[in-house]
Length: 443
Ligand SMILES: O=C1C[C@@H](C(=O)O)NC(=O)N1
Image 1: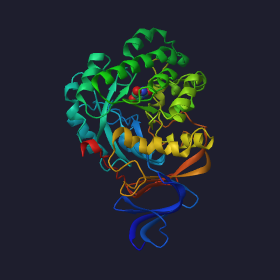
Image 2: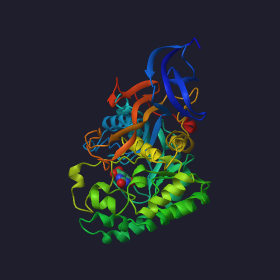
Image 3: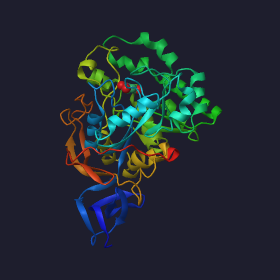
Image 4: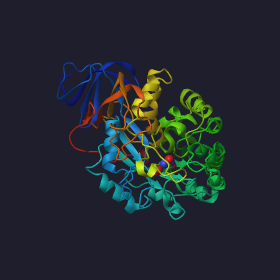
């Protein structure tokens, strides 16, 4: 090969569809141009990946970056900074900001704000409401939109479509796969009184497993009735695993690293409000089912961090006044690589869940695989590095992580977004140049 490349990532162990082995990755114009032996080729820039493992870029398909309107918790710059430091190349950001992202203006506003400020590529969800449900088929086609998000159970913010008629309308109008926070609002309201003031162990009792499975059963029934495809966000229960595994024809599934790593009651006793999120961290039998069915048997399609920062001050209110959500975009890679190191999941499965899975579920165009002509998005990791996760490392404006003190094996060493190194050895490099992600269905 005598061609000149813009960038060659040299000498790393490359892990992709072809398997795992030593190879160089050549990049031209932000795209992967060749994977193999490039020892004779020249390049404008060379990244020495000797001793490191080169993965397809990790896509985090669920984050809340809080801009506009809630910037004291996070903004698009700080959130994407955390993402890049965590080895993440692209994020799909949720619509429960202020204002909510529910129309062309609020979507365009996020894209303008993201321009030259986000370190990673990005797409934004359009929030489904009773008011815009008739127009979602048009709204989901807006540039930069990764799809429709519906809250069937209320969480942070006021987005909500709880009733069957509302969900039916969404499913009748969308053409892309719509995504759902699946907890049954009617049951959540009935059970509010079960919250014990200041006692976070009551959170998974209030928002119990039955609230989740009831909603997910309704949702799958409605999807089949309408002939629609759905994506169930952050699935947390064994009941849903036992159900969804028979409905993969319509439903794709996301699981979060925290639901695989933390368990009740221990997490609530140790972390209090910092373990509070929706749907809740649940008991070990649920965690075991997520591992067995979600991870090992393949029911899960993607890992999403549900990065949902709140300040320490907000979290210091007594339950149930404390807000739900925890940051996670910067810790997804080290947490899951530690599970890989411990033999709980294969590196191949991790890769599928964080890159190709996003392409299958959301239909990204030329993104989500390490293959020729795809975006040159790479997450370069040291699978052997032992490092402790700490509050201090976190770039999120909230400044804390529920995983402070977690001893990780496996760490992101560099993040390459469309051929540009944006993070190396824990430092951001150059300028924020994130671009909107493109999707096959809206090209
Ligand atoms: O669904 C959600 C929303 C999120 C947030 O804070 O935005 N926090 C959560 O715990 N779950």
